[in-house]
Image 1 (cartoon, rainbow over the protein chains, first blue to last red):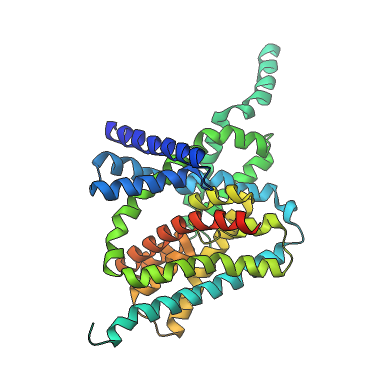
Image 2 (image 1 turned 90 degrees about the vertical axis):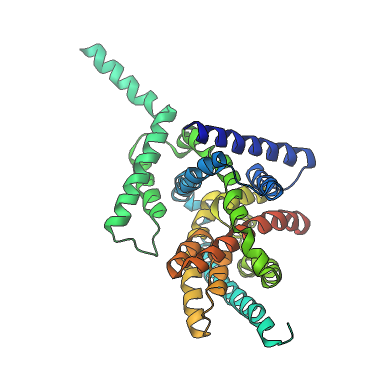
Length: 121
Length: 242
């Protein structure tokens, strides 16, 4: 339990650090994302993951679905705001996702396969 | 006795304002959603979060509690989204060794793939005369939810619409990548996993773990990198274009 709290302190401190960085350099990032990037760099520099950090991050990541639920519910109360645009939204999402999936598969397949075609590598 | 009734009546007015009411409703709907999901035999097209959200919306509609009031009360819980987003740095760090083994295709594929994941949908919506709010809400549609919420607030889009977009994108990416891989004769789990993570965020990653651990690892790598990369370029680009 104390291990989780110590890890939570570390995560919240990185969130604060992210907040400070975003404010100081007026970055177009949320403080959570800035904190995540700072934490990743810090871990890459240390090359070691502490038990505390693992203990605190695992349950939090597992809770993500619960934490975004209040935001998801809003769609039922703000649906009128987008009346008349639902067809556009569906077409953009379905066609857009199909096209981007096709592009990623094609690009990645070509690039992963290409070194094998050159025998001298 | 009549005094007790009076107090009961005033309680009915004040109780919905308390934060614990919002939190109890959210947690109860969450666990009921999970129950319902396993009772329906875990349908892939309908994640438990959607079921839970429908239940919660029903509860809010029935009770004398407005959405704005609810959001204020539940703030105690949603604040945790901040540290939870920071926590995503841990799996990202753990996946970094995959970049070392296959850095060239990853580095070359990620930027165009992540940009097109946003670009195609925004472009199509723009051609169809969508409003700026809709465009801003669709842009982070392939990014994992906690990061996408941060982005959409920067772009001044709508969080609820983004959530709907994330759901449709995740399901659609999973379907189309499964079909396209079969049709294009692609069997490399690294390629399929990476494509699932980049386009289908958490929903695609869950599907990739069904395929196997290699596909799953590459999906979570693709998901993390897309999130980070999009969080960096999209707001900058948006300020520049808009």
